[in-house]
Figure (cartoon, each protein chain N blue to C red):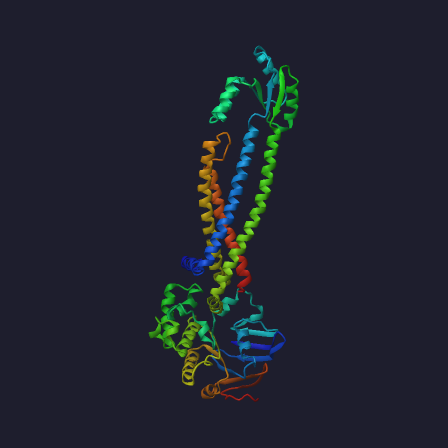
Length: 229
Length: 295
C-alpha cells in the first residue's frame, strides 16, 4: 500500500527525512511516533503528494508518486483520506455538518443520489447521525474531528492518514477518536497515524514506527511508545 | 461537463461577486468607465471615417466658370469634359441650382441667405467625379485649360486630411484600447485575488479531497467574466442610448454631416463592448488564478 524507498526530503537547509525505507501492507494500522520536528508530518505530506521527495521513491496504492503527472494528483487523493490536528481550520463554518461532508463529494462531481446515500452512512459511522443539521460552531472539539473523519472517509479511501488527530483533544475524547480509527481500519482501510501521545500508542499496541531527526530508529509490531531504538 | 456541475460553478461565481460586494462594484464601474471612454473614441473614429468616405464619393472636382461664360456653349463644354480621361461623371450646375443647395444647407440662417439671395454671387460650374484618386490632379489641370473655366477646386486635400485624422484617431484608439484593456485586466485580477483569498479554506479542502484543477479554477474565471460582462453591460447601454441621442441631434441640427445610423452601428458597438468585457474579465481572472492559486 505504502512504500518509501531511500527517501530523503530536504526543506530549505533542513533535512526533514534522511534515507527512509518504510513498507506498509494493505489493511495495516501503523503509529508513526517521534518528537516534534522528527519528520512525521513531512512523511505524511509525501504520501498525499503535497510534497515530492528530494531523493528516493514514494509508492502509494501501486503508483509511483514521482511519476504522477499533476493531472493525476486529484485522482490519487480521491483514494486517500487525510485528517489533521487543527480541525478548527479544516471545516467550512457556513455549512452544516452534512454539507461539510457532502462538499468532498460535490467537488469531485458525485451525483446527488450518491451524496444522499453516502453522507448519512458515513455520519452514522462516526456517530454524528443526529448532528447532521448542526453548524461547526455548535460542536465540541471531538465532534469536529469526527466531522473531519467523516469527510475523509466519505470517498471510501484505501488509505487514511491522520496527522496528530488527537492533539487538541482531552484524553477521553482522544481515545474515542482512536477507537473510531481502529473501526475504520477493521473495515479494510489502511490507517497511518502520526502522534506523540504515549498513552494512546501504549493502549492500542499496534505497529509502531519511530522517527527521530528524520531517520527511522525503530519499527516494531505490537510496539509501545519508546523513542530510543 | 455535467449540467449540475455547471450550475454549481455558476452559483459559486455569483456567490463570489456577492461576497466581494464593494470590490465587485469597483471592478464593474472601472470596466464600465474604461469601455465608455473606448466607445467615445470608436464613435468619433468610425464616424470620421464615414464622413471621409462620403466626402470622397461626392464631387471631387469642381470647375467654376467665368462670369461671362455663355450658356449656349454648355453642351460643347460638357462634351469636352466628359471626354477627359478618368472622368466618370460630369454635371452642369447652374448658379441658381447652387443657390438652392446652399439654402438647404444653411436652412436656418435666414439673414445670411437673404443677403445672398439679393444678388447671387455664385457661378455656374461643372462638377466632375473622378473615381481614381490618382487621376484627380490631371483632370483638374485639364479642366483648367478649357475655355470659360476660371477656377478649379478639388477636395482631394480635404479627403486626405480627413483620412489623416481618421488614421491618427485609429492609432490613438488602439493605444487606448490596449491601455483600457490592461487597466480592466488589472482591476479584475485584483478582485479575483481577493476572492481567492476569501476562499482559501475551501480551495485547500477541494485540493485535499481530489477536486481537479479545472474544477477549482472555473468559478473564479466565471466570476471575472461576469464582472467584465456587467461593466460592459453598463457601458453598452450608455453608449447605445448616448449614440442614438447624438445621432438624432446631429441629424436635426447639422443635416449635411453624414452620421452612421444607430441601427446597426450602435448595436454592433454594444455587442463588441459586451464581448470585450467578458473576454478581458475572464483573462484577468486567469492571470490572477495562475498567480495566486497554485493548484
